[in-house]
Length: 196
Image 1 (cartoon, rainbow, N blue to C red):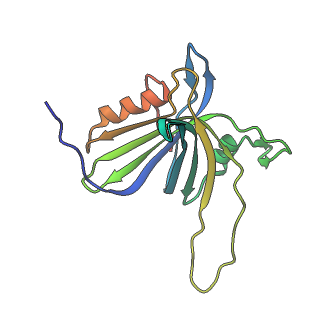
Image 2 (image 1 turned 90 degrees about the vertical axis):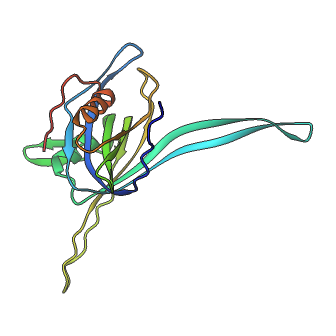
């Protein structure tokens, strides 16, 4: 029996989650607590690919695709300082955030929802990557008010455990079961807790 393809267009993005990768071996993978960062505004995910060609008899004899890392950029209304500390490998000392000369960000997994016009969503999950320090930008207030935003960039690859780098799923409106199953698959959890 064939399923009907969902042809509804993407109209927004919502529900960005991350979890720190604690262990990634051939035998097991584990992540810390799943954390939600609200108010994601824009996302750009680009996976490096190159087509290699072998030639013979003055023509292309064979082609193969080489896939590299996925570069990502996420823009938020604001990224809370506590989440920047975790995602960027910063330190907190007596209420002051410290950036050392050598920053060591943790590996993380991320999930976000691309909302569609019909109320369904496309879930996107990246299983293992890290973020880099963003630029610090701000401008003075003028006659009209303009909100700033925070942007964070990184690179993602496949985890060792199962060689999975990205996951996708279409979830119909109100299908919480499928959404939870997707989160469990990306974050390898039996039960998920949402942290605002």
